[in-house]
Image (cartoon, one colour):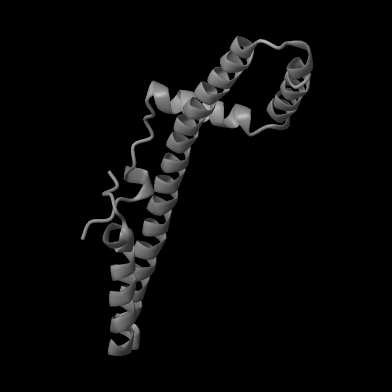
Length: 134
């Protein structure tokens, strides 16, 4: 079994990946949250002053579209973070298996089962995942 090491993972990100990362960084900060709170505080009184159904339909449509797009952008960032974490864990597990392999020559056969379990664990995400990571 070949394990993809972090040094072998391409660091190239598409323009969409870069944009999704930038958006994720922006919306996860306090100023963006404060902006959202101010926007709600400005918007909420319009229920009392503006009795236009069209106005509320426009606001609801815009917020739904923005929410939908933000979910897609944040999911892209989360997926890339999950893959990076898995690559790091694979590298650690593979390094431990190699170290245990070197030690088995000195310690004896009692460590062989542990080495096999560790090597199996390196590929565990492929066995448990519903989709194949690329």
